[in-house]
Length: 330
Image: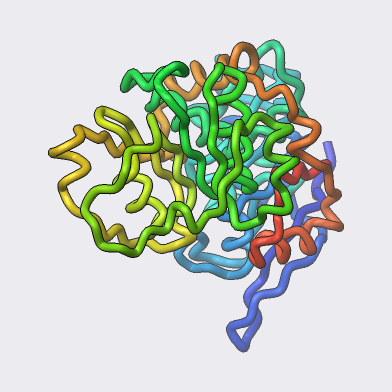
């Protein structure tokens, strides 16, 4: 086996700037964990872009290899559950944050982070889904767990053109829900309808500033990927006994709302933490994503880039210009 591998490495310079480049990285500098994986595919997430830009809230020490998603083949294992040649998925936990991640051709991780690739998914498809697909699946799981059913009314998805948004739309549509996709990119309406949205609305419709504690009921449930005022508005627009799942803060980390959606309509606010999703549920959701929840339009939602093209894609996602998913092919 090679002693070094290609990786996108982010380095901190003497003047507190951050520089990223593709270069060789020694295999023996990977952590001493149980499972060594040769990475075939990764994917680009917003958290990766933050790590690649020197965000110390995501990654404390540099130089560093980002990439919170990885799919590949086991090369060596000191754990009896995994063997050389096994096809596996690794997402979240500390991968790509403070542990060298999927933007390198090899990772070495604890066995407790590793999910066997389910039948029905290729390695590439698993990374078209990636953390975004798992996050969306957790949101759908919360809706179903709280009895939000396909015949109960429209389900709102905010941040609809982003990775989690597109995955949420596609999964919900596959399960028979009618989805209202909220976006500021109304020129992408035809794309959103193609992947499963029943209707496309301007995001201003989910940014109420009236201050009223409750608004007219519009949604049986919602998957919110942006936070801030949109999450507050979605809560006030959800019909009695509905559920709102939330996972994002790009529109703000603070939630200014009242108790009235909860005590007068019985709304459930369910948080999504894909990073620490219990392994039993994680494996169950990956099985769903390989079968009955598998989006019908993974090819339309995702596109490939090479390691050498990745830095440009990182800039694009930081500027809010990414649509769908970017799969990184090693």
